Length: 247
Ligand SMILES: Cc1cc2nc3c(=O)[nH]c(=O)nc-3n(C[C@H](O)[C@H](O)[C@H](O)COP(=O)(O)O)c2cc1C
Image (cartoon, rainbow, N blue to C red; front, side, top):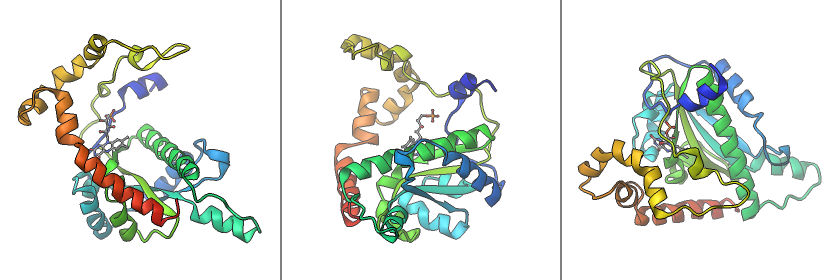
């Protein structure tokens, strides 16, 4: 497939066939993913692979029982990992100074790029993938199930497997490129322009508005899917875990 065509057509896959995925294939895809750019080539990340049915069952509640967890051939939890690097520093008579927000952000970016490169490699090899944002909601439970040591914190999860149905053609809707691309300096769009950019999404998602008894799609996002109270509660949970881990 042409590269541009792959990127325009790729989409999240949430249900998978029963086909297993070998450790060897996973290791090769993870190795390729690890060649993503990262801060100073320090590789402040690890990925925990879960294939065991019992272990997937233990992870599922932390992901609010999204069915993709138990359906997947493998569940990959991508974590910030300062533990390995700091041990290497101390074993080499070097005192690390990474217990701060700046280092957390660097590790967060690097872990995300590693995860995304894994998704691209997996999709290019015929696998379907789905991120689980619930990882930063219930990170303490995930850390416990996966026995994460101090300085190792979950960032995101990717489920992977052979798609249950033939991959349909066509990517998911995106804003037109002029909405996200600014030349030389930021240009503020008008409210009317913004409304026009979101109109196709509103048109295709009217059923969500009706089902939730709302008057706009934006209200489905703000009141139903990502309400303030929930975001504030889970922010506190994740913030506490980061503090416990020295960030
Ligand atoms: C950080 C992150 C968290 C996500 N969390 C979830 C999730 O919890 N459940 C889910 O079904 N999809 C999740 N997704 C997938 C998005 O819904 C999906 O990428 C988006 O709707 C765009 O669709 P596409 O990937 O098909 O282009 C997540 C994606 C990202 C990047």
